[in-house]
Image 1 (cartoon, helix red, strand yellow):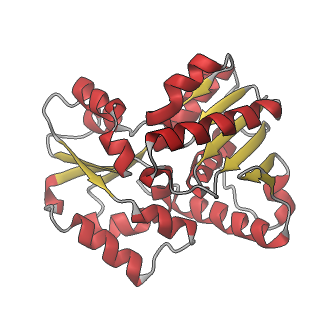
Image 2 (cartoon, helix red, strand yellow; image 1 turned 90 degrees about the vertical axis):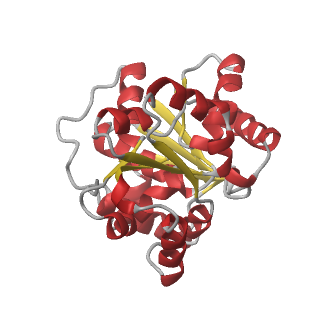
Image 3 (cartoon, rainbow, N blue to C red; image 1 turned 60 degrees about the horizontal axis):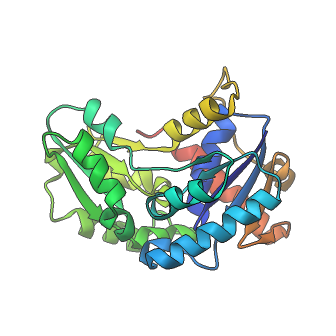
Length: 271
């Protein structure tokens, strides 16, 4: 099975990394639209245009199914893409439902990009599942910029996270929902701020489970095995990487991808 996964940047690697755990042995194509990141500050028309271009690129690469590993692109483009193309196209949405169902009556914080927060897709989701109106929405667009710079635990990142959360009483929250795939890289700092009693919930696990259902792929019987990379070829053995249409095979960028995957392995267990 050839699986295409795309995002505005390197955030979608967190979805790909989860796929390595749950669906090993598949052929993956990962596309990061690094020329246009971040999507969260673009217009809807721009985002739709990018998504159509990437989808057509992945179809030409012969993929059997596409995962939009980007909450922002999903909210804007998934309906139109499904109208245009016949292959299965999976999207992502903030994991509000499992947060509501899996926590007590305390509040839930959803952090996402400004576009995701504004779009009807999230509003409709909240209308369906947030009956007690426990969910608060907080845009955190600069986390995308920090992630793209591979800046995960600097003083500047800590200051930004602390300042964004400072208007809320952290003791009021039972869960923090990560509504952008870029946000997974910062899990240690969320835990540092909220403490161990607040759950961190993202949509990656559920998205890959849904991918398995749609494509008929059997899930791994050892999804918690360690997936670290120590050599470049280990990154590329099951995957072709493209940055805005350019295939990645240079040493510097491969080293960058290796570090990102290893960071994701380190934070994967944090919840």
